[in-house]
Length: 223
Image (cartoon, rainbow, N blue to C red):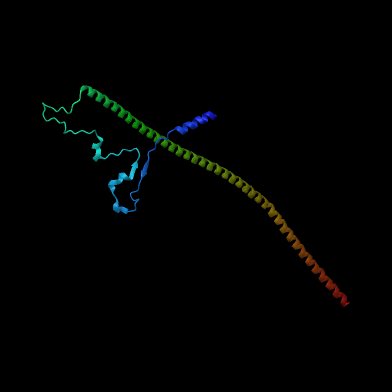
């Protein structure tokens, strides 16, 4: 931002008057800790003061009205009315003009309050819209989270599927190897059986030869 524009903005901010906000203060009726013995329900208004709110007491409404004693200027003789309560046409025109201008002023004042009410309604509507927007954003983020969970589940399932394929291949490979392992074991068993049979034959042959040797040895001694 240019330097002059920055200075101008600071001047506007420094010279601006903040909008008066309603000052709402609440005083607890139990602040004096005297309990319920001194509780005065009729004094509830004194416990809540709202800045800008004009309090009206029905018993004191007369003091808010223009003061006039209707007994002072009443007509007792219809043919001889009192002259103490009169107004010339000129004064009437002047008074009427004043009251008309006051009526205009009050009408403008009421319009300003209506406008203020509309402003509050608009502020409330904006707050409501923002609140709904926040809820919508929250739902959108939850939807994104659900989608991410879905994608993660897909990847987990893919990994499980790959693991299943590897396990299946390992099982099939083990089955194929089992055939050769069985053959190898069978061959080993046959070799062991053959070896054992040969050893038996060798042992029998040795015993036979030993027996013949003994016979020959016995015959030679007898001679």
